[in-house]
Amino acid sequence: MMFVGEEQVSIVTDMTVDEFYDKVRQILEERLGAVEISRRGELYIRPSGSLVSFLSDVKFHGSVTKTKDGYRVWIKYTLSPSTACWVLGVVLFFCTLIGGAIIFVPALEKSKVANAVNNALRILREETERR
Image (tube, rainbow, N blue to C red; front, side, top):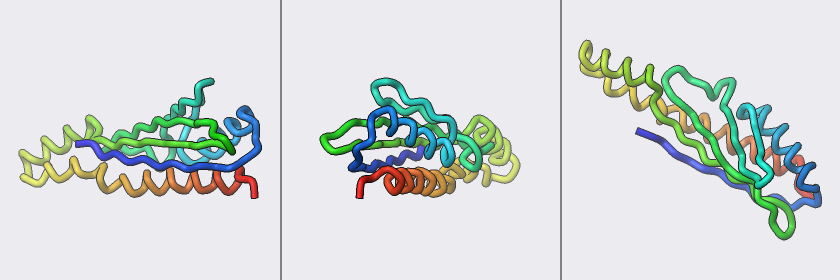
């Protein structure tokens, strides 16, 4: 059972690609985790901090695309039950018949991840957009 979401933002700015990539890396690392950006603008984010959970696996991927007047940043995230969650679910199911409910823990964490991504992109826009 996977839960998927995505967020994107378009930013009007005169920043160079290198300047913008540095700012993207800085802001996303502060809020989401370790960030790598390929030369083609592919985003790889390894979640950290409050986004890491024993009961769910969070995965991010995205892109930074140059547009006519700035950039578009897109991030997709998926949450799925971790191996530990499945094991607990099976054990609790046989012991209490409610263990199946534990595999829905990632659904509860989806709003936390969505808010973190949304806030990171909002801050990125605030700090880079031309006014």
